[in-house]
Image (cartoon, rainbow, N blue to C red; front, side, top):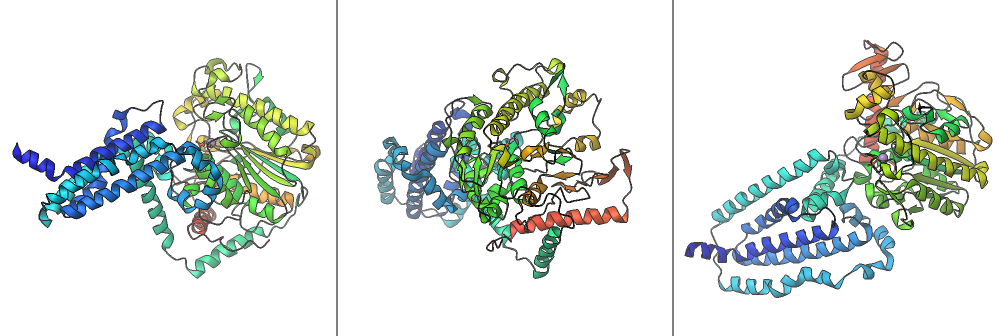
Length: 619
Ligand code: GP9
Ligand code: MN
């Protein structure tokens, strides 16, 4: 008994540290999550994270240990306060990328820091001034340092147990939300589920990992090879539609989960997307346009379309390469006298947009804070309200302008059905597909109103409009619903790959150049295609101008590709003839194509990894 009491007193500083830090992180957790928070659900992960950091103190002799824990407590508590204040403004957690881009952040927060701070935040420091000095004083009086061997042993033991528990909790979250940890697309969600200490561990780990992998130098030969490849890309033989939109405004609309299979489809005689169908008839419509996104979801679609580079092979470009220089559409248009503005009615920090958009070259980003959140649907502000408010902002833009709008309401899992308009989905009522059809029918209506308004207000006659879907809507797990909708029994692998198309159309003033263009292409081709129309340079693009390419080519992040005749599926290492749907053997020509595809993916990866576009843009 006496022994137990002695041990307790010997480690009183450690025990108190674990107790108080766990408590502080739990309190922080409660502050950032008011609806679904339970102490029980995050306790173990928080406890384990505190134990990990505390285990280091066991290596020190008593006196140093006391000091170490004291400083650590101050440091973590201040960080919690900073995180809390950051949350009050951005609804997010601080990340390394935000710290490294601190200047931008300060610009955003402006004078509001003082309004965000609450006097009660100081309670996080109360123990440091009241309790810790007493414990420290007691410890200084009763120094009982153990042998190095004992200290090492206790460190290893506590560290391993804590890491074990923590790894288990992190893997569990990773299983529930695949890609969350590697892409960090929703940082606050990580902090909510694992506590903010764990979140910061993971954020630091990801950042270090990426920095280390960027270190390996690139050979001059490789660099030249990439340069030659890019130069050859710009040598176009034909010049269709070159500069036909010179000096015109450009409005690009990226639509959440808009997949091609809904276009021109009806249920019980009613069109799913009557407005888009109508606009497609008045525009240059690309009916073999694929999304090429990877783990970065929406942000990959933006990245591909803006910069004409492939998404990262793991993780999201926006959270790994936020410090890179980019030479995409906003930069090039700005060099040609345009203003460039992005619009998205959701949390600014989601997908690290507030950090990456200035890097892409946007002058301005209207995020959630710039909108009146007067109508919620699904994830956030409804498309109706978003498009209405954006319309007013667009009218005030400095001409010629480039406006990029990203919609939100038709986001998975499409379950805000009560708020969508009445739309009879027949046998698909209460299925994921049925709910999606309702959601996209709603978004279609709002897009139609927006486009009509652009027309009525005379904006259309002086603008080029491009509209496309960001990525798939129906996951593989629900393929049977989609198969039945398309009157099929089941999808073959080829059919499933072929259905991963998103509509893309470009509208010209007076409905010029309208028609259906069958060339196989994808999101990577948007920037070169628009650059040609607007008559601006496009030297730093991996994609192709779809109005001036004879052959199709779509390369997917996993190495699959198609040219419109053959579809290669990398997961099976199999070539399919699209017309006959049959498997065909690899010919030397196909082998060359496959090698070139892998080269192109490698070039894009190297451009990102070595920040190859970091010199001044000479346009
Ligand atoms: C949120 C929206 C959703 O800002 O872009 O991203 P997603 O989950 O579709 O990748
Ligand atoms: Mn999306």
